[in-house]
Amino acid sequence: MTSTQVREARIPSASPSEFTFDPETTALLVIDMQRDFLLPGGFGESLGNDVGLLRCVIEPLAALVSVARDAGIPVIHTREGHLPDLSDCPPAKLRRGTPSQRIGDPGAFGRILVRGEFGHDIIDELKPIEGETVIDKPGKGAFYATELSDILAGAGITTLLVTGVTTEVCVHTTVREANDRGYECLVVTDCVGSYFPEFHRVGLEMISAQGGIFGWTAPSDDVVSALSATVPTSATR
Ligand code: TIU
Image 1 (tube, rainbow, N blue to C red):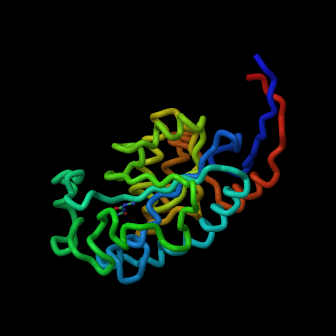
Image 2 (cartoon, rainbow, N blue to C red):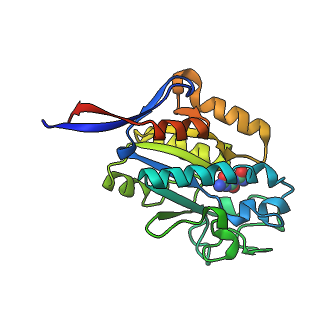
């Protein structure tokens, strides 16, 4: 056994209770901040959604990403989408949605949710920087049919700060997957968004209910404060 210094970050205000984490074993997950979901005139808006409800996430999330980069916390981005021949899209998923606006159909920003198309890529404000991992996922969860587990294990990551869109769909599915795999998850409340304010509110409540059944929640200001006030503590490993 060797004694090492652990930097402990604390968020006393987290729900349902104080959340502590070691920045050395933490990653920031940025889920599906893609043009198809967020740009005015895009796929999300064409389905009748108000993209403003998602776009309010951009500013606090960009700030959090910047702080994470400065703190040396890996930033991992995901994109929901499919191969051009849609061979990785189950027929059941393909059949969902409005008949004129399905995955693979032409949209304002290229074929909807198809890899390589303009609309499939991440918005300019949150563009990954060189060296950051981008996970292309065919499902709502970031673990299903992706290399995410291997990447996290390889980097010794045990805690995830989870952000992105949408709260009740891809964020929730990913947090549930992560929880079952043994990760500690904190969902950053103003850095996740939904087209449905009620789903957003209840979705966040569901994460931390029952003593943190899936994880913790806290606003980005508190995460940023915790990171800037990390204190080294002695630990035996
Ligand atoms: N990324 C993600 O959440 N994909 C979705 O399809 N979300 C919806 O809310 N539709």
